[in-house]
Image 1 (cartoon, rainbow, N blue to C red):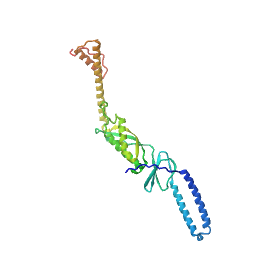
Image 2: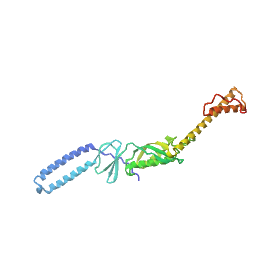
Image 3: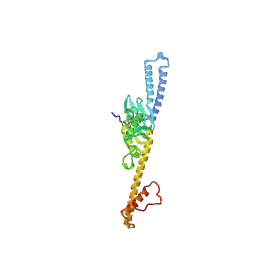
Image 4: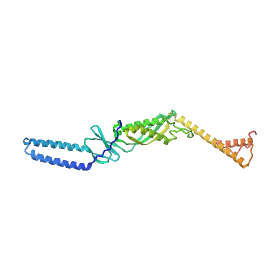
Length: 302
């Protein structure tokens, strides 16, 4: 059963503080009258009414002392959860010097934004590769009653659930993926991954009355035991992707060159000379180094 915050408004403590001082003066004056009237001739001559008045004065003094327990202060973005003999009666969010029932237990809960800088943990990504990952979470208490009564320790609860959400989220994405593959990855889709982490974390900590405002990855790397092999793999994939783009661009340039030559009828080429031109252009465009000024201009058969 979930507890919901019930807003209550306590009294301003300054007027009641003035009344407490007036009550102290009244008790002092009453004690003076009591001593001068009933106890001036010694205890042996005190009547029953005198002892009764003294007992009443003691009880009034005890009540006056207990009433001091009703004062408390609240800072901005702070709430006081009020509990009467184990029963939740409401939460006060009015800042300042306040006064409430002195028999109430007042549990103060901070409503300010908090940072959770998670430690680096080791998990397996979607492909089973061990990676190191960490995140920074910005959260605040939204419901003081839930944070106090529905979980044992809401700060520890948020910390544990954040680690669990990060582990689960990281296992659902690969560490890296080719740009043209259309697959979300931890390294290449940081905004989408952070949004997924935020949504999952909010679902996990909602029971504690906590609102997650931001969750972003702060560290992401391959585990040391496979970092070298994964670096070589990334380099190989980058080389293949670059070569693929170079070849696609070179083929387009060759097609454009042949098309323009045919359109302007600057040079009529047979199939053999076209093949030779294509060969020369691909050598120039796809080579690793700058082409030398010597270019083969003969046919493929000479």
